[in-house]
Length: 246
Image (cartoon, rainbow, N blue to C red; front, side):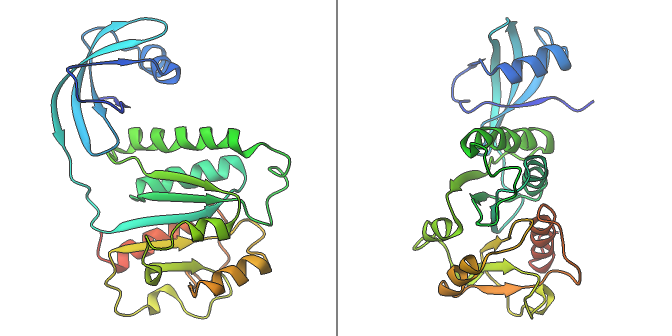
């Protein structure tokens, strides 16, 4: 049986006290772990450690931390996904799969053509759920590097946040109306790859104008129209293949 894993942001001391109610419930009620049981701890920055449960209470679990070591990221390139808010469960699914594919950074923007199920929702509340989903996906998949996740009011704001920090040559729009297929990209030797995908109803005209103003390249990743939650997953997978990451 695989050893359970939990996210612990601080692993520098010989002991750790977990007060995350969801983690406590999962360890104590679902996995039914007890004092002296072992598990793996990771800090989201590459370090993992052996953990031994010393005490379980309703509001906390205490661990003894031992044998900490740094794990290398198995992917050589930096991958970033710029994706819109879409239907909640679909967005969570997409984030989980992208974590499993080694995406390092998420920029989530509010599209102009926002799905009606989210139109009247407080998206800041959803953000906490998305952050938990990313951490949960790291716990389940064995990923030791928790991706950074940022939220923006629109696509333009998310792109402006990248100016000066990202190689725009490696930023691609995954678009159903593009003329070039991803397999037609030549001489791809970039260290950073970013993709932009649209919502269920596609990009708005304003969003297209914004992307054109940044001089971004559009590519097509298939012959058919992919779902909003599927497109970034397929896109990152294809770039993995092109860059020899598999």
